[in-house]
Every structure is written in structure tokens, then in C-alpha cells.
Length: 128
Image (cartoon, rainbow, N blue to C red; front, side, top):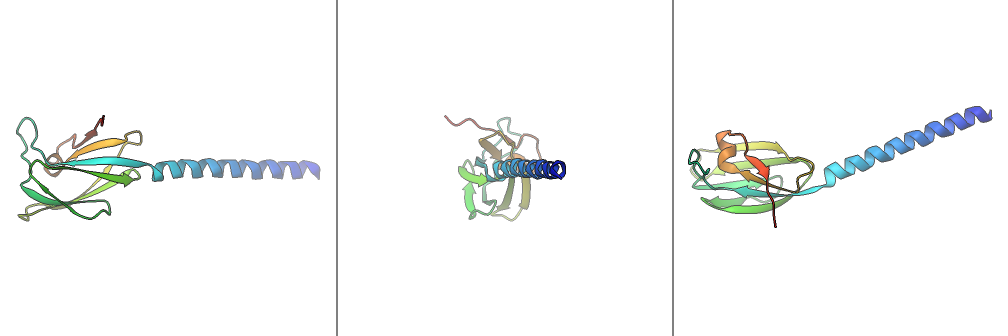
């Protein structure tokens, strides 16, 4: 009888330990906040020009207006980043979904690169 009781106790404790670990990992991933810089500058080599005027919505934040050369900062929670871009002239009306690397605190998203479909639209950004 005591052998069955000790097995049951070990199983219950093991299940509780695994549950606590999974809960801690889940809280870390979903609760981590990141600083996202949205950038509307032309690409350095001139291959992609900045958008003249647009409205950008990051996750569920209120929309922000950007003109050519503007940059703004947003704080988001979790790893998923949803960016809705609407140009003033109506040529762009798209939603982009990006995944922020877990270890990155600050990232820079180039909207002109993003709308052009270029690689490297999101990059690590060092804030000093």
C-alpha cells in the first residue's frame, strides 16, 4: 500500500513540476516586451524610396502618421508583430506579420523595405 502511495506522490509532484516549468516559459515568451522602431527612410543604395505619406498601425496601438524620413518608437509585448500600412495615395494597403527574435530587445523595421518585399526589413537596433 505504501509503495503505491509513494508512486502516486512522485507522479503528482512530477506533473506539478512540469506544469510550473511550462507556465514559466509561457509567461516569459508572451510577457516579454520589445521596443520596435518604425522607419520611413529610403534605402541607402537608392533602390527603394521612402513612402511620401502613410498611416502605420502596430499591433493594437492607435495608428500613427508618417511622412518621408520619419521614425517612431512603439513598445509591444510578445514575439508577434503586426504592422498595417496604408499610404495616403492609396497605393499601399497591406498588413504584415513579423516574428521578433526572442533575445532582441530593440528592432528597427524599415517600412519601404517591408512593402517592397526585400529581405532585412527587420534588423537589430542598438540603443545607447
